[in-house]
Image (tube, rainbow, N blue to C red; front, side, top):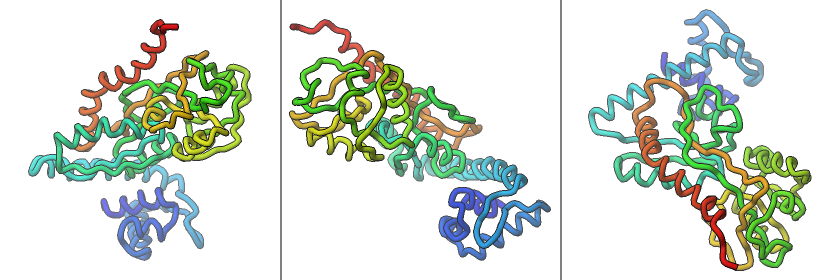
Amino acid sequence: MIDKLEFLLALASERHFRKAAEACGVTQPTLSSGIQNLEEMLGVRLVDRGSRFQGFTPEGERVLEWARRIVADSRAMRQDVSALKKGLSGQLRIAAIPTALPMVAALTTPFRQRHPDVSFNIISRTSVSILTLLENLEVDIGITYVENEPVGRMRTLPLYREEYQLLTSVDGPYGSARMVTWEQAGKLPLCLMSPDMQNRRIIDKTLESVGAKPEASLESDSVTALVAHVRTGNWSTVMPKKFADMFDLPESVRSIPLVEPELVHMIGLVVVDRNPLKPLTAALWSEAQRLAPVLALTSSVSSLERHQPTAL
């Protein structure tokens, strides 16, 4: 029964029979037969079939919801029994928005010191994709925005506030400025994250709120690509301070706080709201709860420094 539900989850993820079979490590006829057996067992058609996968029937969508619960509980049970026997071990799968990647090590490093038999698989995805991956049991934990867009049936743990910086050439119009307003930033030739990223939607909305037109002459889903273009001196970009601080910027590039408004957004952990959580997920959640005050403090340092009087 569980293996057939796993087939259904794989099909929901891949939307393709052959790819779903490959993901499960079985042949396509084995996967198709398993799903047909499930349909016969339940007495309903679950999948709309043609020459290729066309989607799930309404009954299939309902069974898919149950499959997620049952498979999640089954995996949690196996992991729990294994942990009782030999301690925490296995792989934690984490999906993070690109701008949160620099802080992932602050969680994984102390966690692995406590649990050396645990390994990690970390991928970068959009905020929307992270929620889908969590629901389909393809990742265990997400790191994403937890305030400004709905996260559905998820449990959230705020970690730190994301603040924004302008990366620009020292020879540009604001190269010597101590702070730059969003309105001023909107007048520069910008390279920005691609529109499917929530970070970009935040930037566009903020620029619009101050009367600036959010136009980018270059878009990319790679922050590294954006920084490389800023280094040429022909573009500027907007990115979270934690990410900007990660780069070894040349003397020709400055990272300047953005103000008016002083924009912050909460980044945190998200997991599917099920009880009990898998032991590995629960353990990382506890580690994040322990570290959250430290992460929150380090993210607020720049704001505190910004309001200190500076010598003229």
